[in-house]
Image 1 (tube, rainbow, N blue to C red):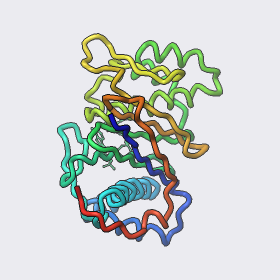
Image 2: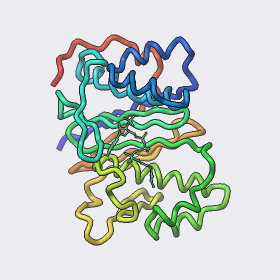
Image 3: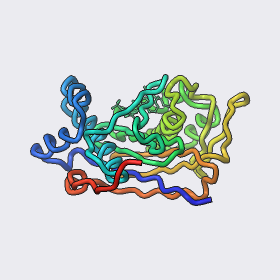
Image 4: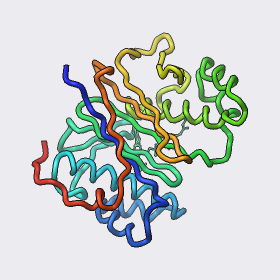
Length: 244
Ligand SMILES: CC(C)(COP(=O)(O)OP(=O)(O)OC[C@H]1O[C@@H](n2cnc3c(N)ncnc32)[C@H](O)[C@@H]1OP(=O)(O)O)[C@@H](O)C(=O)NCCC(=O)NCCS
């Protein structure tokens, strides 16, 4: 079976200048621009704009067409899917200072990014959200690494619930990760198979963690291509390939 490459683009929003934002907003559709305008905090607006620009530009790089022309349907738990090219599977994530998008073909995919500078609350929150085995691993982390370890689990758990599209409708303690080696297990009664998942963890900047989840019949054949996007990439003219 042919392997699959999950393509990830990420962008540190602090790297952009004031003049770049109108160009990125021009890649969005009207509804996204209206939503962007409603954010209370500028930093949230910028990471939203960056994530949606990344996703649209990534789709156009793969399949051609104008970035702003892509349309999406929304699943029962809020997961957007590409309307006119359902083979293409896109997922977005944004946090303070960073946005990311992943594109795969056919297979469920999810991505999550988190900012390491957020107020440290992880170890206290873990018993509410995590599986007991994850809490045990977290309890063994040295204090100075506890928050980062918590966010390593958090990004993986979010990437998984985003890949399956259920979001928080999936109980967060119904599945458990180990970090080394990176693996998932499911509580009894959960109809999923660890042998059908590819997971990956990244540190795109010193201040951010990123995790990826991809469901695949042969996960060992999956590769991930990670690209730090810049304005040249984001605003390049899309190719002339027609949409699939
Ligand atoms: C979908 C969800 C999991 C993601 O929330 P999040 O981490 O706050 O946000 P992210 O930036 O990573 O992802 C948001 C994007 O995911 C996509 N998305 C929305 N619902 C989704 C779903 N059910 N499945 C997959 N993707 C979804 C959208 O593109 C969304 O972008 P938009 O808000 O700009 O339109 C959400 O259900 C949520 O509210 N999470 C709360 C966080 C939490 O308590 N996590 C505990 C983890 S241990």
